[in-house]
Length: 172
Image (cartoon, rainbow, N blue to C red; front, side):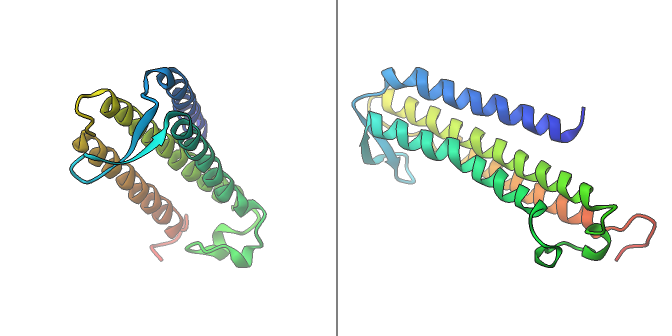
């Protein structure tokens, strides 16, 4: 199975899980949802339940598509606007498809990670709102955020290192 296919499958599962989580947890949330927390996990901002779900749904479900669209735009850009190591080699007609596949993989993988982060944030917010007193468990949030940021760094580094090399040549 190609890596792009795996990334799309993970994205699809994560996206579906977020839609299901938003739908199933809606009735369990209080009418006034603690939606913002300080660094200690104490609530300092609230929203009506409906607004919270609509906002998180809009951001959590639309933002990943914007990321995917942005990474797919490379197909439409003139070569002069593409910033890539060894651009002359990689943007030559015979190698361009590899650039497009790698960019799509990066965008789809990061979008899947983004949806998983929103899913974790939502489920943590639900748990916090069902607790008495309301309090967000910060270690889970920091761990999820750190994992997402690490995935971004690793993905970008792998992308850069892949295109830094030119097959059949020494390091450039």
